[in-house]
Length: 156
Image (tube, rainbow, N blue to C red):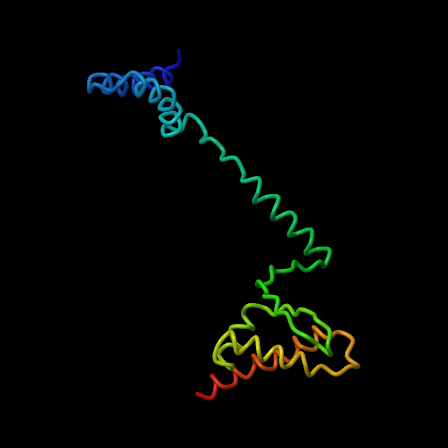
């Protein structure tokens, strides 16, 4: 054995002897013996520290983002949940999906959710017959209504 090995064995042996004399269980002594030798060798500079395994999920995520960015593809952010409101336009039943955040803004203008739903139904009843996309027309008017709350709060 080399002199370095003897020194390493002496340090680990002394540590084990101390654990045994303190009453440590054989399971603890065994676990300690298995890991402590490498740790001491690293501390003494006789062994390089083990290389941490890379986070594969992080690497793959970064690679995908780089590839999409290089190709010019824009990542879409998840949209806020929308609530479907059932309305009638020109005597025809339809539904309009209104983003939850927009509904909350309209609630502040109208005074509550019941009033908001009624306002949206009133808007839907006023859709001109020539409009092809009735839901979008109602959604645009709802956006204007929600912006009134922003204007009202900025004047206070």
